[in-house]
Image 1 (cartoon, one colour):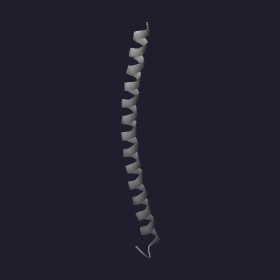
Image 2 (cartoon, rainbow, N blue to C red):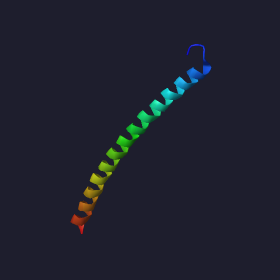
Image 3 (spheres, rainbow, N blue to C red):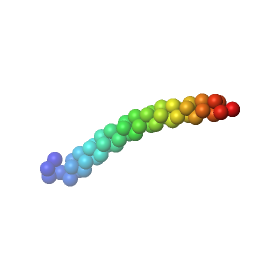
Image 4 (tube, one colour):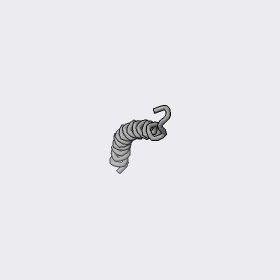
Length: 53
């Protein structure tokens, strides 16, 4: 691999792919957490609106 440009390029590509996979999973977890947070906030606002009527 030391003298083969194609192998080095392939290794970099695999490492980049792995980082993209990790980032995708992180963003997926962040999305789920954000959805949970928003649902809680929405319910709080809905209850507050019901209590003011």
